[in-house]
Image 1 (cartoon, each protein chain N blue to C red):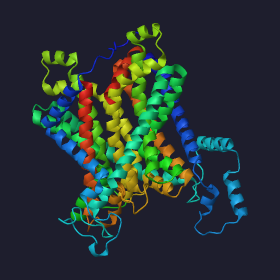
Image 2 (image 1 turned 45 degrees about the horizontal axis):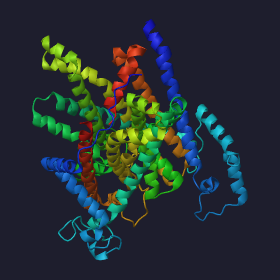
Image 3 (image 1 turned 45 degrees about the vertical axis):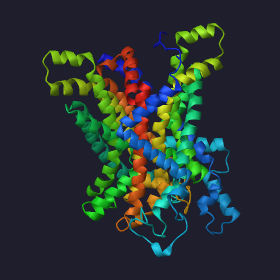
Image 4 (image 1 turned 30 degrees about the vertical axis):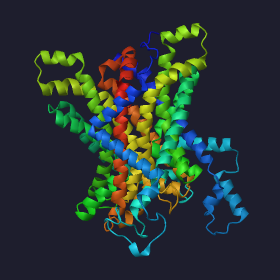
Length: 290
Length: 333
């Protein structure tokens, strides 16, 4: 089968020049710059929450109930008198780790399945791809809810549920890459010289697949953030009073008409963060396609 | 006519068999997952450990009634047999047949999903088409930037904000209930905003691809005006991947209706699923998941069967695989 010719890996551009190009591109595009800054800010929230707020995210404060946003309380206070901005900042770690774990599960499991399907072909490929089709047939939210029913509520269980949903796309991309590389001429040549399967996988398939899989991972990360936020909003995450982005918004539902800031501002934060990650993802996508 | 029969025999048959296979596999996977739920289902049925005193004999009776004392494989076969005859078991919480419960809820969700779908298609196609058709670069860039933002918005937040502005601040639409058309608007718009994003992106990309094809140049050189080239050539050929995405969207709408139904207090499939998960009502969870998977499978089947109708190139098996793989490239990522 004459496939699209696959080029063997060339020596990469030197590290210094690559970094300089990236930085220059970031500065040139304002939306990308803003997105990168927001991302950095949120990551800092997760790593050193104490720097950003001196309030306690969990202890109730009866004298400060349902205060509107002001200079002392950036996002206002909730029905227990807790500063909402503080709760968001302290909840960032948990709300970021879950999607990361989910994407990691999807990447690892999906890659293994994709590799196996692409390499072993025929029967194994058929079985594995039908399994992937089943995962695709059940939308991510529903799949995660099913798994949470079995495993119980909590951030980790949500991450596993969402992660399993991500296996499908990664498996497909991996499988396509494996099949592409397998049938290329230079791999044939290497095999005739005695190269083992393992060597070919590590030296050729993985680096070639790294680009598209990385882009997919970042896009999946955005989906994971939104899915986990939605699932914690529905109440399947960590129990109160643990702050988590989605549950902070859901707690504000009864007060929507009066204390609108409990729902609006944290939700806006989630939206802005997701938009910024998406911007970075699209940038990576364009670079990869070049 | 004989060509259609030939297609019918091979393509349609294969597609239908594949759909059935996926449904069966989904059923099995869900069954296995839910079998892993820790705890005694008999206790759950009897009312959990909410202080209710249940005698061991009662538990044994429940186990016998529901078949828990049988080996897992027999339980599976029993459930499978039930699925074929249309019996999805009995709800732990409501003590009623799951099928009845689900059917009473599905109307509300279907209405919502269809409304959101129509909105999403209109909005998505308009934005995607405008982004490609317009001569203004600024407008094109702005319209191109909208779908990624729309796809990144959390649905629950959009719903809450819409409720805040158009139900509380300006009392235009009801904030709860599923009676009548006005109650459809806010939840429908919520879901349509996110759904239209993917349609707009795929439609725009497919349009740009078809604009690059040779037949556009030929049509222009024959004197076709801009609108004609757009409608009769570019848009027509861009339909295929767009329809694929619409199919995927339908199933997603059914699934994500959970969020809208919770926010806007609509009594539908999503809400039923949510309640079932909260109370570990396993047959209900299974039933709801199966319905949603069924929607996905049936919709994709319909889309697959529409392909040869939409695109004459797909009517011969040889050219089908080539065109379909090109279609897949436009839809993914």
